[in-house]
Image 1 (cartoon, helix red, strand yellow):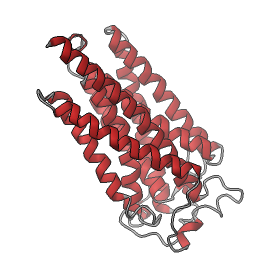
Image 2 (cartoon, one colour; image 1 turned 30 degrees about the vertical axis):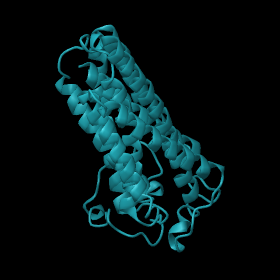
Image 3 (cartoon, rainbow, N blue to C red; image 1 turned 90 degrees about the vertical axis):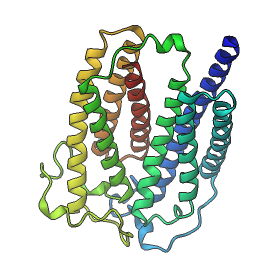
Amino acid sequence: MNFSQGLRRRRISVLARLLTALSLLVVVVSAYLRLDGAGLGCADWPACYARLLALPPAGPEYGLARLLHRGVASLSLLLACVLVWKCWRPPPMGPVALPATLLLFLMLALSALGIWSSDPRLTLVNLLNILGGLGLVSFSWRVALASEPPPMILQRGGAPTVLLRLGAACLTLTVILGALIGASYLAPACTSFPDCDGRWWPEAAGWPALRTLAVLQAAPLPGDPAGVNLHLLHRYAALATLLLLGTAGLQALSGAEHRRRAAALLLFMLAATASLGILTVLAGFSLGLAVAHGACAAVLLATLASLLHEG
């Protein structure tokens, strides 16, 4: 029975890791389609950015990237159904079944959200799509972590430190703010680093202009007050994340082997994600750098889950 359960755990782990890789591919291709369609880094930047907002919603063009996105997303949904069945069939594996079920529900919710995704003017739909894609990677990896065999689980450390929990909260806020910038097409609002075109602090005038439920009718202009506030908050939240998670990661380097590996990867992904975000701004919002920044953010969330799992 123990051998059978161990084999079952390994199969679930392999399936979850495959789903993590596929989810990351979905995030990358989705970001490319969204940013390329918006004209990020176009020749006449920023005047050419987000011109699609002034046009009526059009049906998607079925190029290679979109077909790849649809195919990988459909395969991921099928594998998630298989994963949930493997977790819940008798005897059910409770600790693994719960995150697997949440992963399937998230996939179904994103599939339903696709009904409105063809209209780029819907800020809330854009935001939920971006955050949902990042959540797919994180949840898939959490299933893989939960499927680890008991001997590995027993090697975990204690409860996550306060610094690690605070860093996780700051990272979550940073990701939400970054996703809101992308969902609202506010990239051109701030074109310099570390200041925001001469401004260092959010201004009161920017808050009334921030409308997450708005239906966008035109591209926001450079220097948009709401965009400036979001960019600055995103940067300060990222700085707090670097300090908190960086310190927590350095402390974890003195722990057990699994914890050290997770901490080292966390520190590397922190540096990579922050560097790509800075380079994206300095390079005039290059499409490739922006996509890579989003992909690193997804991997960073999964890496943080590993360190939280290790304790």
